[in-house]
Image (tube, rainbow, N blue to C red; front, top):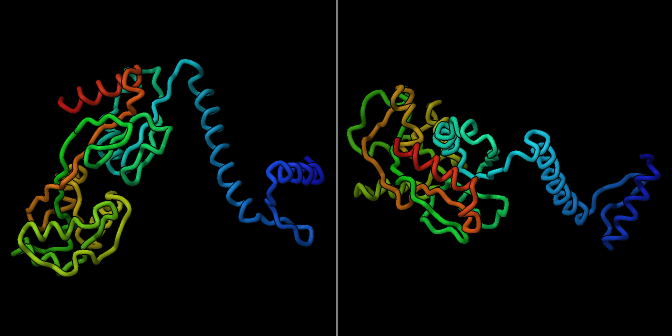
Length: 263
């Protein structure tokens, strides 16, 4: 399109919206505040259209997408290994998995199922408990030369913080009848994966679910400087939209997870 054609289209769009999308100065255009908002929403819509086109090109009319949300570390360390062989067993179901930070999924209308930590209550979602969460303190072997004599000694090291469990270290000490004043101090990370990586590099001690770090403990990349296990108040759940309870794609995933979870 020529420059004049683009300018005409922009003017027509602004007239349609009854809103100025650009500021014009010296033959240059700058997005107005309203234009920035409109651009962000339009880009999201166009991205969804592009994804729909790619899905159709890849699978045609034979595959039905199953949109799954999962916590990033849980996805990488538990869900992905669990799903090995699913696509081969169900070639007509196309898995579309996205990271979910936090526990809210009801507002995301594109999610069919989710694997999340919480209290088991999500609006408009059916919940099946998978397993409890048991957190342990871990660090690199190079950080601590010998096992700690007591839990209080942990406070002499940097305590790595998880944004999703802001009170975890406080609870860890309190349940052992120890009062510490600096349990909220330390580098804070969005995901357990980042906490684990920071612990591996010797940045401090992380308090993470044992399930997500068992491979590192078994290999010796990480150690437990103190053996206490914190039993979290929440648990991990498999969720699915109530309206999709009887659909084949959800039924297939439910059966797959339940079968392989107990193998």
